[in-house]
Length: 614
Image (cartoon, rainbow, N blue to C red; front, top):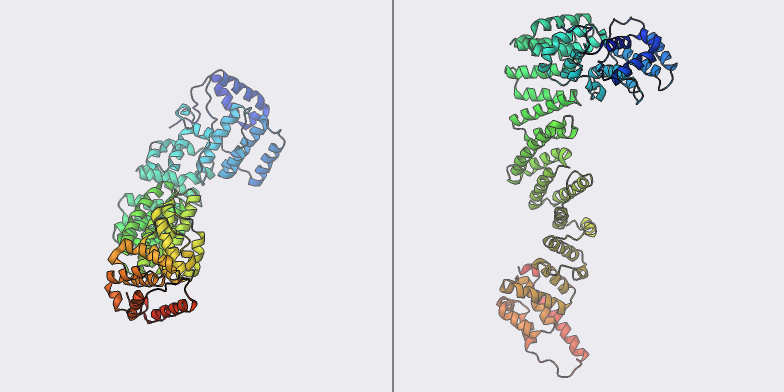
């Protein structure tokens, strides 16, 4: 066991200086002289250990009375003086005695500065280390506090306790094992408020490292603390001891007695109870999933909560509940309680996502099931690039099924969320993909006859740089203008090398505008590309355009190329027109021109609708 009075290798003068620094009564006689003496020793190359904390048990006094006295002492000091640093240290030590870590650390933040004497700095560092290790917030230790855990301070009697507490704070129960005996001995010198805070962790380490004698002593020490005796920590740790001894029934009983609380130990008891029950097959997977789902709502905000979600997702996968597991992983990722677990959770989620959406796109899920699953996941993964790909496949399936409104809405949602993700720096910009989503949205709106929103969208879309996408957009715009009676808009734009579909829409628009000359040229371009594969409906419009444009040679050529045209009811009139001799005198007389127009109209009325000629 470490000697409480042992100090590291220092000269006798340094030992004297530290003893003076540790005793408050001596400081009252000459703090400046002692600080100067310690500074001189340090400048001489002599290494000083931190002061030993609690050389004598503090006098028990009413809390408010003692606090008022220490605050008054602080108020009488000069800001930045040695006396102020000493008063602040004394006030922080008072809060440590009452286990008030947050308040004590706040006070010690004022004990700093380039002119701070080393003795005061060392004492503040020692107090910061003690307070930091009992701080329930788990915040990082200050640099000067962490420095005191260095082996060069191995001679400092309090270090063994703080080394053990540092290991316990990091969750290293096994690593703290070799230090427990000395740490517990040293702990006896500290106030009961500090003992009450650290006793459960020390007992757990003793159980984990199977130091049963020490564990029994620590468990017996719980009787001296009303808040610990028969509390959740006590029963949970009894359960751990029973489980370590293969006494599963006793462990189950102890965990059950602890699980009703609301603190960390109760949470751990509930988790342990589920684990013991599953291991003993006293609980089904479905029951465990239900309990873990409840626990994920009861305990939130730290790494243990994240592990609960991870375990829940694992059991949901074992049940075959892919959507439920994806939701759980989504919560784990979104909450970010354990950053080290997020990467693995994303990988697992992406694998499950691929499996789910392959079933959806492959027809293994009904459209209703697919939509319900997708809606459940959207709230968690909208900013996830992998999910956006899956969502696009989802929209493609619904577009193919004729659910154009669902598809258009989904394309728009993907575009919006990915745009925000780029703005937030969550993903890289992909212009072609964003253009593709916009074009798909427009195509879905067109297929569903959503002309009003489509018109608005077409005004917002930036012309894609990709040639293929630009041509697809041309077709959508052309069909939109055609369906809304804006044929003149169709012939104004378009790509330099339009697609066959766009050529056909533009030719149809010119025909409906009765621009026979340009319509004939447009249909002639289609004929040149498609030859006798030209759709019969287009051939009719080509024939009529040529005929109305007075191009009898083209009309006759079409009749030879498409013999079926000669079976039309109006062919006899057209054929007669082919053999008529045009008047030799020009200009054409008004009555002759009028007669020709009337004859052409009569011919058109005898032709069947285009829809009946396909």
